[in-house]
Image (cartoon, rainbow over the protein chains, first blue to last red):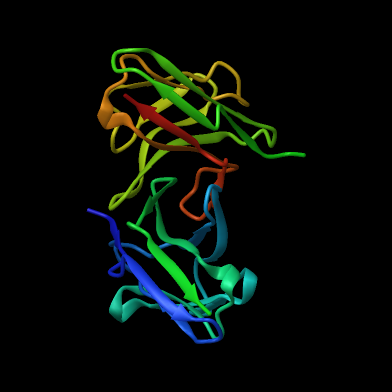
Length: 111
Length: 114
């Protein structure tokens, strides 16, 4: 069955440090992959998406993600984290016209 | 402004009561979705709709009913609320409903069943 796993429930990084959030997927065909961010009390906002082509995709707010088929991964990265990046992050795969989400990773940013 | 509006933002109800969560979108998107968000589970799909009068079950449909008489509205009804339905509910829409179609989300309804 198709699934998405985000191994880290909670991550804390210092402001200005680099960030990598992990995402692993299980899907037989070419995956359509997404990263969403959810600020407290808000809905989910699309950060970036991967369909095909260049395996390194750029998104909004300075985020990027790299698709690695051999590792079934789609990790999210940011070179320098800002305090406003504190939020919950969700990885998702498109299946049958719907999105299947991972469990989410909560990011805390310390000064 | 165009977008998805969910109402109410917060709702407290008692076990056994019927409650309806409203969702309205102004994009005329064909596809609409209801997800629930719970700690440790991420977002799970309850129901979705490909068009007016077409609905289908998602991963966790039990205890919920949906309807879609108009393209822009997709209400979710809990016919007899249970404590296990305490959650944050998100409505979303998609223009094409394909695997590469991103979803656009409302701000959610936080439901507490006492």
